[in-house]
Length: 221
Image (tube, helix red, strand yellow):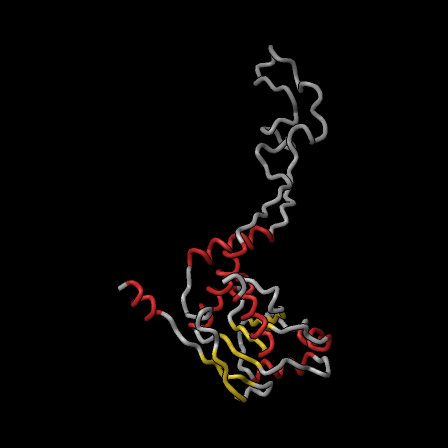
């Protein structure tokens, strides 16, 4: 019974292939063993937290009473003044004193198994596929290298949110034309990860990059 329910949840995705003008020029069937529409939210959360932790600089630093200047002698004698006893003017209780339990430079990064990273990438792509937010592009080419021409491509594809273009070895003209456009990023099929997908609403994959991405996700099956 469980196997039957699992089979029912599987999906077969067939996506149109668009050209730079936004017109359909063909169709492509995605590998149903990988792109089956299933999303493991718990796994996605674990891997996303790992990627975000690895991005932290960890450079926050505060000075303890051992690092602030001054405070070598007692402000006043121990007894007879009627005041509370104080050993140093750099006590954490005093203004300009040291900080207790403050942050110090540290490395927040850690790793999870490669199989978890790959499965999380598959889940993130399935999540976008379920919401019809993945498009296949015949090719990504901007000969002029002008931002205006890349903006025309975005308009033709009706992309109004954060978008990531997955393409193999983009030409310098493509990189130049896209780098000044807000909320648009380029990524290769061998370097894209689950966090890259989740941080963008629209996923645009070139036909060639789709083949390389599928081959990458098929390894180790």
